[in-house]
Length: 131
Image (cartoon, rainbow, N blue to C red; front, top):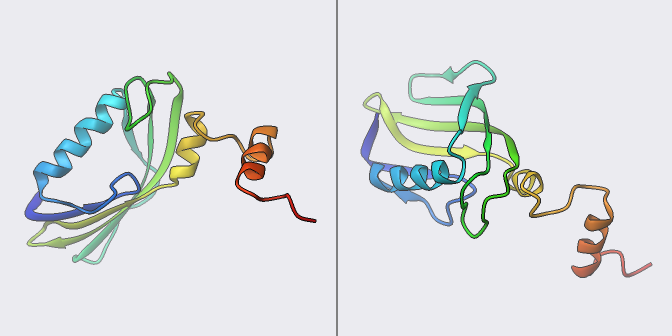
């Protein structure tokens, strides 16, 4: 499905991952954090034969460690768009786009918009102190 010189990026990868083995290790870490993860199609896959995009929704429960964050037991619903360039009919350059800020809010890492917690966070960052 992937070429040996696969190039993969998403908001959780600090730098592009190169090769199917690195992508597999990344996927294993994500599945350890959200073991019941499932990906549901949310629209048509679009392709021109060289590129493909696929909108989807990732659903699951945060039951394991994700990066520096221990399990919260919270449900996740993340809208994702995967955009890939194909070569020889296989995945070559792949990017997954999703709102990492929204994920952090769902996990309780960051406060929801409009809450006192958000106002306090903005004050700590220096916003709202000037007239």
